[in-house]
Length: 237
Image (cartoon, rainbow, N blue to C red):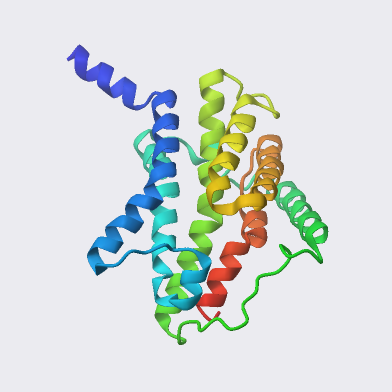
């Protein structure tokens, strides 16, 4: 009986949840890609070049993002019976959260105006023929790479703060550690754009910590995430 209670307690320990979430986010997308590759008997590298040439593969990175990034935080939240208010999903301070996040998005767009990161080259993309499936893929893409990705970061910020008892701080250990680690993980896929990603998540994380509302950051990140716009271009939307 005591052993079962210890196992139960260990599962809900934020240290266990945070570590396993980071590990899975680092390898989950590769696992999904390898699994799909085995099903279709082909080696797949779901980067922008491949997706541009084979738009029918767009579902692979979308599923990879949902499973590798969103799955565990959502699962832990449900199983732990956490109040979603902890992660900023509430109406209170919504206006301030939206205003500050849209300001960050505007500054980001102005700062990158005229650079090669300020637009997405969609010229020549074959795209998928218009269909209801495209719309479904588009909804999943926006959800996965927008609100779900922000929820992942916010969840990690809050639960890392739980570990260090720094929930009440705005510039907290949870915020700094999460942004730094997430930035490092993005260096493998985003290269020089990693800095822009880390700075945006730092800004949106501060907004979440300040307002206790994550809806604004979800909107701001969705607007400024160029991969969403790339996928919509591939989907002919």
